Amino acid sequence: MRNCRSRLAIAGRIAGRGIRAALLGFGLYGVTCAGALLAVLATGVHLGALAENGLLVIANPLNFPFYMVTVLSAMYLAVIAAISISRERERGTLEVLFYGPVDPVSLMIAKFLEPVGIYGLILAMDAVILAGFGSATGFGFPGEAGLAMLLALAPLSCMIALGLLLSALTARIRGSVLALVAILFGLLIIQWGDTVVNGLENLPPALVPAKALLSLAAGLLSWVSPFAYLSRGWAAIETADPGAALLVLAGSLAYTLILLALAVLSLRVKGVRTR
Image 1 (cartoon, rainbow, N blue to C red):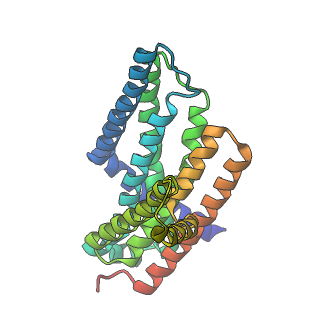
Image 2 (image 1 turned 45 degrees about the horizontal axis):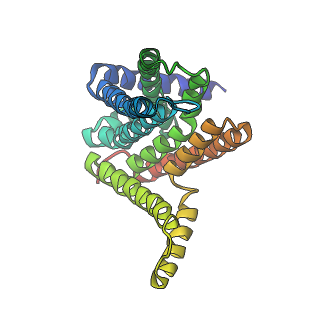
């Protein structure tokens, strides 16, 4: 128990240092401003439809702007996680940390808590921005938006855990970022490609096997893709389905814990020095 408390205390101090650095940097505010811009554009689409038709029937018109903000935040947090350990290893500070009371478990907890804390800051700023949009446009700020923002943390944690695993496996920042971009881009291509192909009618017979193969790949990758957990989580939020939300929470928790355990194991095997 004392060892657990000590690890959490150490992790809290390391994570706090990273959050303070984010507050003094540009990335946090750049992502928030970009999210606000996307929300303005999405809200403008709704207002254009309202002006053209005189009537707009949408249960929660701010849901789509919030979804765009969530996706952008997920990408930002994944990059932060992906460079967090490889940056320390490349600079040599990771080795210094391990001379002290830091071990792979406490370090991984710290590097997970850091982007979670940054997400809390993004949430606070985005909540103010979306509330302002709701007031200015008359759309209002739905009461379930706060719960949706908190539930979004579950699928976002999958993205963070994936970034940490890649960071533990790679020796340098460039390798971490390239690996993350390649994996996320590949997962998106397969997911979107499956959606597009399934929507096509009168597919040539020669492409039917390719369609089946793509659907099989998309089905298998839906269990390992952070985007799939994000999509399922958002569907549960939009439909207000408690059962689906609990399944997403359980699946996201298991996914996150498995990837964090693999990241700790990778850090133990690979060590703290660049090779």
